[in-house]
Image 1 (cartoon, rainbow, N blue to C red):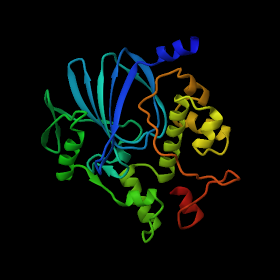
Image 2 (cartoon, one colour; image 1 turned 180 degrees about the vertical axis):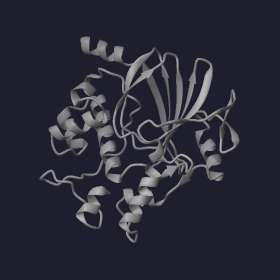
Image 3 (tube, rainbow, N blue to C red; image 1 turned 90 degrees about the horizontal axis):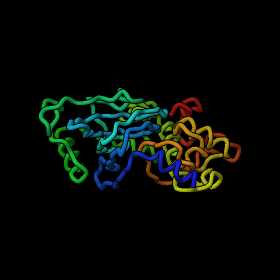
Length: 269
């Protein structure tokens, strides 16, 4: 009873989300706060747009990747809409690297229903028309997609010089491919733990080398130990289970480089 009550007391944000069939958008989510509280904003790889509705005001914020967890305060009775873009989709005017680690940019209001972007007033998107909104941005060249990122993520960047691939990836994503992989693995593990998976099962399913490796990773990227995540002691930001991550470590726990070039180049990639 005590653990269940503690878990309920810790949860003050509710989330709803759906996948997207857009070539630019990975997922659309929305949330609302039932009371004020403090939560952990966990590491995230993706460029994102968030619309906030709070105390009669509405505004749109552009966000980059987060490479570490941070504590954040959440006001009561707020509502949020998030458009999480596929890796490689970004705004040239606000590159993910410039926005990294909560260097967010909030765009100026135009009216109570619109905001200014690239000299034009745009209506705020909602949960149902997010893809239409993004398609309009893409037609104007405000949102672009670097197709080489998908090839790099699939380790199929043949014919592209490794330094060129690195530059493209960093510009479009804001962090290295290895950092993306580490973040996505930790988020996958955290979701499994929140859903009731045991720590040992999570080690196997998320393809960690051992329990110590899992603990170091989720503590560094989620901000809690596996046991703390399982117990739900503190509210986490939006999480959802993606595909099972690839195995990156060999039988001896060494990082398995799967890119071409020198060892030093692979380590940086």
